Amino acid sequence: MKILVVPTTDWVGHPFPSRLHHIFERIAEHHEVHVLRFGFYPEKKLKTRAFVHEIEDIKTNQLALYYSVNALKHYKVVREILQEYEIGTVVISNLLSGMVAAQAAHNFAKVVYDLPDYFPASACGYYFNVNSLPGKLVMAGLEKILRGTLKLANHTVTCSLKLMEYVKKLGTDAASVIPNGVDSFFWNNRHDGREIRERYGLDEHVAIGYLGSIEFWLKMSPLLEAIQYLAKEHKVKLFLVGAKLRTRAAEDLQRQIKNLKIEKNVVWLQNFVSYYDVPRFIAAMDVCTIPFDPNNPVAYYSAPNKLWEYLALEKPVISSSIPAVIAQASQFVNVADTSMDYVKILEDYIHDPDKYKEKIRKAQQVIRDNNWDIISEKYENLLESV
Image (cartoon, rainbow, N blue to C red; front, side, top):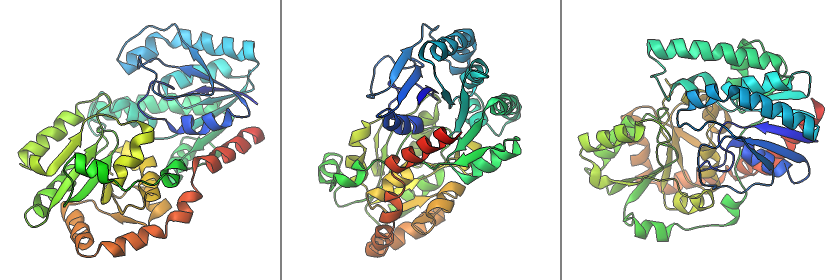
């Protein structure tokens, strides 16, 4: 197959690999994969086997403005790649540029749309509160764009049943669920976490961790309040590893920590660690969290990769009530939406950690069945059948 991928973000410059990066870097081992590069980041941080096409685009840090002013360029580049390389399949995972690419590819190649999250909200959320009136109006407009693009697609792929339900409501019939996964190196190269714990003063403490983007889809206040409560009687530290992408969510989080006066109970590495270093940092955590906001559409429809990464390293997981997490791993995950939910689970863990560790050990076969190699093979088979 000859495939063109129109990704969600910068293919080689983003701090960590996207869903399609995981999948198509594997498919590129035995198929010809071309990728449009949206050059949001000057430094190349990710390796690639694909043919990456740089675009002579107009540079701007504003995402909406970038896609708007470069729409015609993106259309022309997609058409040129399709014709020059005789591309048979275009895989799109982008809202605004995705619309342009689908129009350029229509009647020239098969179009598959990959929806990894709730695009109208994830695009809107960088500019407006998604639950505000302006936010809802913007999302309604973006949903019209998504609906029109999906009509041009031969097939739609989502990573969760909730997103599948959503695209069905938008009128898409030909759709499949192919979930997110985890790299095998998460369990092949074991780390004990000692070096990280010593370096950041986590020894003799219960380290409650979160690794990922600090962005608008999180709801950290219940977890922070639980840390404040637990710190009165237990040696606990919140270990945060991650930075903001584009909003002021990190500044808001810093303010919450200060207002609760728990600075001494928080260790926060405000940067993105290398993807291949992620297991070292998760290994230093005793309990891992997914503190997403279920009332935010981005979080509600998400299927976080970190779920499988935490479980692969045999870490107890506390997640908010995200449908995909509950549907895919309810037997292995503890659900918390309020501060007292966190307190009850964490106090129980402190008194009997072995009970939680045994629960996670039972997840290992499920995790191995959700590795990116297997998922990529499923995706490849789907593309060949469309």
